[in-house]
Length: 304
Ligand code: SF4
Ligand code: SF4
Image: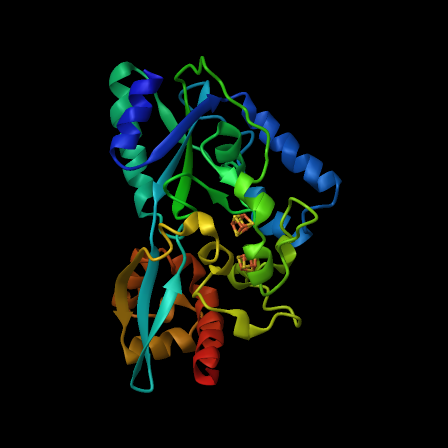
């Protein structure tokens, strides 16, 4: 059943692995160990790690396995309009959730006729993908999958499907990272260290430009090049050679819409059609920070 399920997923262009559900506690212990070593900045813990769902069990079944699935995703380009100029703006892969529902439907279609169930679960997906053997860590703490590079989005599901051939691979960086430091050299904030495995997340642009807290004084807004997130260490990475030019244009914001986005951090003030465009880009949850990030991008365009 597991092999049939994995091949069915792969036929649709996704990649997946299955592990025993008992590893949920190993994932929790890993995070607790990092906390004890004070390797996780408090703000990161508050903003992201509390979302992990280590203890909630699905209502209708006892999980026996975890299915981790990667869906390929391109870089998304949109255009904004300012002073009669159309300016391209980049959104990195992973922000687009449109494949989440497709993956869920595909899994349900495969397991339900066999009498099994699935339920989405929020766990440390990158860590899970590496432990399952699906992905490998880069020195930049981004995860990579053969054939997809880092251009994918992960999802995980509990299932009552028994997992007889379990895998648990210890974390390690890709072999290629041993003789490469392209990401270390290109990272403008020095978030990537050759001396420790964990990224200095408190220095990563992604953490700061997704946050409502405001940019720290040391952060040079000129480093921004995406609407949210940062692509510098992914684009330079040789593991992404085959995918780094995969870009899709997904819409334009008119002069009036751009002006509203620049002015307003309140989504309720945006016209319904603009809200819909943001929803389709999965940017509504970032509506409060779009104005700040767009202003930083525009300053960079003006100064270039
Ligand atoms: S750029 Fe080089 S060191 Fe960094 S993740 Fe890619 S292969 Fe590894
Ligand atoms: S995402 Fe950007 S800021 Fe973060 S580690 Fe990579 S290059 Fe550095």
